[in-house]
Every structure is written in structure tokens, then in C-alpha cells.
Image 1 (cartoon, rainbow, N blue to C red):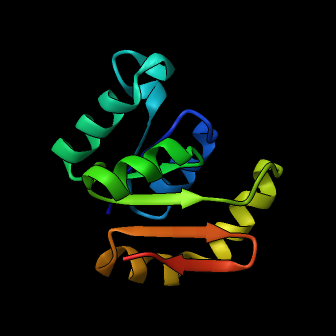
Image 2 (tube, rainbow, N blue to C red):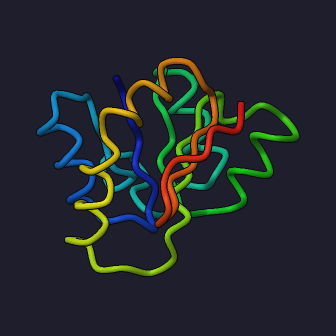
Length: 117
């Protein structure tokens, strides 16, 4: 599975995903780095078959209204320590992989996964 982690999330999340055998990039890896616009992030992710991983509700609106990005993983946990976020993702990782293989929009909150489509 291929991911593009957005600027509001730590680079270490991309490293954690890579450690799980995924192809994961962070927006810092893009030519414009964290100055990349949402459209640039979306274009890159869609062109490269990546799931956008974000906390940004602008991506949700774009996905709902324009089906862009094509695949979206929203992290709606609010602020939490990086270590706690990694633990939450690890706890739901197997279910998350299954959900992302069949759904185009998956949300991870502190209470679990929400499948939107």
C-alpha cells in the first residue's frame, strides 16, 4: 500500500508506515515540501496511487465534493503525542489495511475506525 502523509502529521508516521512494509512518503519529500498546496498533494497522490493521510478537513471536503483525493485516510484524533498516535494506529493497523483495501475514505478517531465509503 502506498501513502502520502500530509504536513500536519509527523514525518515519523511515514517512517512507521514504511516499517510496516508500505511505500510511504511525507509532504516534506515533495519538491515544494510542506509548502505544497492541497492541490499539489492531491495531484501527486492520485497520480502515484497513494492514500493521502491527513488531519486536514479541506481534504475531506475535496474528497466528498470532487472525489479528490481518490483515497483518503483522515486522522481525527485531535492533538496527541506522536507516541500515542503511533500506538493508536498500531492497535487498528490490521483493520485499517482491510478498510483501505475496500474503502476510499477511512477515518481513525480515538474510538476506532469509521468507514465512509
